[in-house]
Each structure stands twice: as structure tokens, then as C-alpha cells.
Image (cartoon, rainbow, N blue to C red; front, side, top):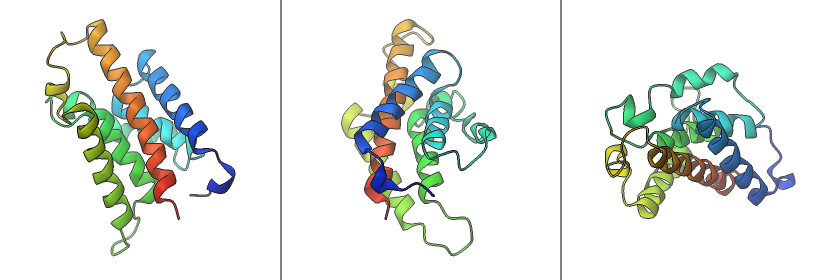
Length: 154
């Protein structure tokens, strides 16, 4: 990453991440994983073209509607890969693995599950309450992802 983290305000970046990701979801532009990945890519000064969203398009609703892992968390893990992932065989991936586990474990601690079907079981799919909750998770994860990027950036 080319960003000078010493010149950036972590709290401001976290707020921007939450607001932007929530807006992308709320407006119907993108779903959870897409909104998180695009937001982080944008806040990292777009190291990848907008087409990167294609990578995240199969993750919403717990992997394409299967109800497994929360799409927002999946988007966060992909975004951590933007920041810390490896490009070549044999390169160190310790940071991305550690940050990804921390995001996952934090989300479960905050929300009691990372399973989409468990997280939305009390709502009719597509209802206003369902969307509100998923918008919240999307913003929450984008904010935490920025926090972790600052934490692990060296």
C-alpha cells in the first residue's frame, strides 16, 4: 500500500468506512461483501480497479444464498487481503491470516455468530428489519477492517 498511515486519522477512516459501506448497501448499489470490499479498496486509494467487486459478488447471503459465513465478514477478509495478502508463492501471509482470524473472532464476539442464516433467522428475507441488520453488519465490518489495517500496518 502506498498510503502514509502516519498522516491519516484512524478514527476518521473508520467512520468513513462505516458510512460508505452502509450507504452502498442501503442504496441498493451493492450487497454486504461487495460494499465492504469496494469501500476498503476506495479508502486505500484504489489499488485495484472497480472490477474487483466481481470477486465479492458470490459471497452475499452466506455464499450465494447458502446461509453460511456472513458476507460482510467475507468482504472484510478479502479487503484485508488487499492490504496484506501475498502476490507470489512463498511470500509471507502471516499478517493477513492473523488479521482475518481477528476479524472473524471479533465478529462472533460482537454478534454471537458468523453464520448468515443464524444472524437473519428472526427476519423475513428482504424485509426492512433484515436489511437494517445487514446494513449495520456491513458498516460494522468495514469499520473494524480499517481498524485492523491500521493495527497491522508496519
